[in-house]
Image 1 (cartoon, one colour):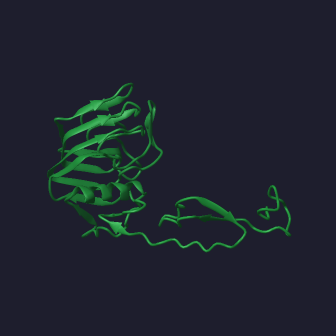
Image 2 (cartoon, helix red, strand yellow; image 1 turned 30 degrees about the vertical axis):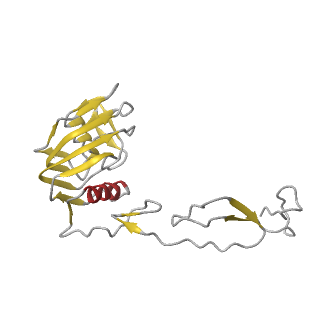
Length: 232
């Protein structure tokens, strides 16, 4: 173990006779463990006191980590009626819970926010066979129930960009309006989903959906109003 007597040794040494060096934050630590203020090194053992997360509207108001218990599904379905709830659902999917289901209970105005596609993932297609899925993306069922999600923008460089990114599940009865997709670095861009494809378990499906009063700004990519690319 490398050690150093601060103020005596000019550099770390491999010696059991020297002391361990500890790092201490002058203003303590955030709830996600990140230090605040200046980093101070000392030979005195440091007790790290990490505070608990303080969640508000589904996220910690200090570090942004998701509150896994913000919403509770009923019969396996999350009911989403606000921008905060929809943003929380997207983060939950993108955190690895891609097979969950949801319905919209109201039209939702996203207030012009930068949107991160639901179901971030990668998919590569080959002319001789079905697409190869690198990550699953969104594999659940999302029923808009005739409602509209509006007023958001995407500045994305992921493999698939849209309201949904990589779709291997079902999206139905959903309208998108007044959205801007500025995805000049993404190879597949669509208003509802960047890519819809199949896996061994699911067949991606977009049913009874539309995009209105929106624009896609994209170069050197496959793009479409509803789906950027369809494979499988």
